[in-house]
Image (cartoon, rainbow, N blue to C red; front, top):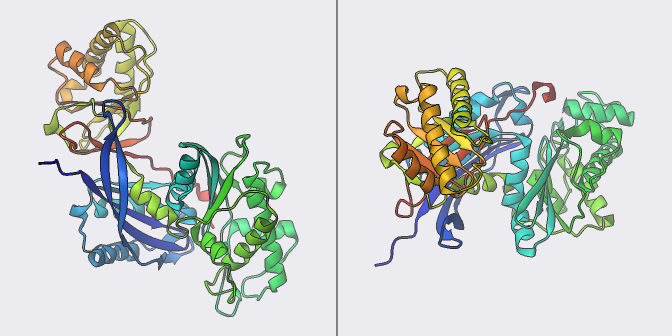
Length: 485
């Protein structure tokens, strides 16, 4: 009888500047590669696409946590799922919502309510990658071996991700979005965000709250935003306006682009090409979409309609936040699952046992002091490069790790020893560790996972006949308050 194909149920929840939405996916897993040592998501089936809600706010600086939590609960009930049914996924706060005063409080609460292994995260870089994945740009780049740029324009920010083949080259982010200006049904201004105010000053336009701007003034402002978007697309970004609107790095890869996709709420307006009611959404989105379409008409870059527009980020969040260890892991299964383990990264460049042990001890002591709490469930020691995978190196490394854990006082705490490697050598190292000491227990050694200092790690229960484990890497990065309204 054939073994049942393993699947995971994953949720994606996107709390954006303009909209909040939820999707649920079923992820089918498979092993690939020489000797079937890699676990990948073979198929993704989105089984529930929730209602798109306007993101509830208490005021311009504060998200309505209770209202958003109620929306998520309602969506789970409508979909016929409970948090207990969810194996993985992400709650991501995007755009201007990540700058709100209570964004971290919100995303942590929603993630805790949504399922045991749901990530709480924020930040324009991750949003850029997720949107490019959800839009289909990443698949287009991989299948065509091409360089594709996805441009996700939402309510508060524009997030770009450049894919080359199966790699992410870089992300590019701007304070440009459809909700930087807001209007009442008559077209009177009700809100001007800080980036919009800077642009208005640059253009010499004087718009005041309560006034009804002329369409021509709004088109002029939209053209300035479109200029910034296309300067960033072509990688020049040299004007003072573009520099002022850029979030993060402005040094871009020198690489020609084979194609471009637009996603996000404004991306949907670009694709739909309709602006019969310019103020239908009480914002600036239709003006910005029209300006982008005008620029596209004269752009030499090949344009492709995305698979998803307004749902691109939430689909990326629901399908791309879980990774899998290699199949050569070594696990004390009784210790699993593990949640919210802080990561400490050690660069073990030394060759002798004494120096290696001292480095391990320093890293663990620092992490234990930083996370001194009764609730600490353990630490993850990340080893990005252990050097040669020879038997002698594994033996030396095992002895150094045993000594380093003992010297740091870690083994006295009776916490699980969790070691994460990028190289495919978990089973070999674990065998040496168990031969070196019985104090390192329970022991979980996994490989083919990249993590860094400041991350948190969840490790799920074994799958595929105990050959691999699902791993969720959590990186909480919230926007600077200086970028807030």
